[in-house]
Image (cartoon, rainbow, N blue to C red):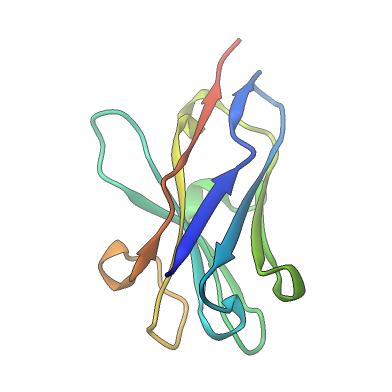
Length: 124
């Protein structure tokens, strides 16, 4: 059975950093592009970042470029999201997801497996 479990969320002050982890079980991350999404209260879930399979190409939504970094550690079956220079606008529940589509895409429609989410709150 496929499971994705996020961790690393919490409360952080503006300008601070967090590192989210997404541990997979029941399947091997090597074969799936992986994405991070977030959903703030009253808003739709949006794509934050994704990482492809073969060459490890990464993609970011404009609002996080230069601040967030996605990476994968295939040996540990884990994907990470390093978040720096956090602002209150980054407050949301963050989800990791895997897609059977053979490329990286920041669209929730194409993702097949989802974690339960981890809360990130940026506040003074």
